[in-house]
Length: 264
Image (cartoon, rainbow, N blue to C red; front, side):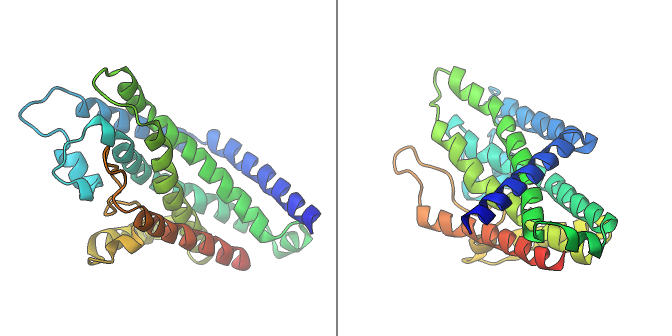
């Protein structure tokens, strides 16, 4: 039993490595990653500009951090703000990459190829999901470098290194897992990339905008309604609520991945 588990983990690592190499050679992935880095770096520069008559957080916080609406975008909130921004901007690329890799294999392979493989579909799809997740988590980490550098070199700012680790784990990983799992399922039922993307964007918009309080945070893939800002005095306002809220998109994504493996 243990040897079988080790073998499947090794297979998943091989598939994940192959997926990372394919993504790194994909021009769309490169352009998207550079564009998101440029946008987030530009927002970081704008947030640190000495503008006295305009609240620097006015539109950034209003759009991406609803719990912080009206709050000043200060260096202590940089990790949360820019993690949410980069996660939202990268999610569409995550969907495109997930849908594309599954449809390509689904179209090229035949049922005989499926039956002749040594490993199950779950290991195959889990390896691909791990590769996509790793690649985009790397891009997310890179987009946070300008904010981290500002925190380090600004003599008046405090460096919250734990925040730069916590927010990508708490925000980006559940969001990407949700997108990957749902995209894999859509690839099974919808053969058209445009229709699948439209459905996913509409689903995200409906969930984000029209799920009413007080339960809106229960299905919040991008943590735009969740109070995740850490207080320098009291810490996180509701750690149990954060764990519960972020576990829901993670569970949905993993469940969708498992369901896709049965249909693959």
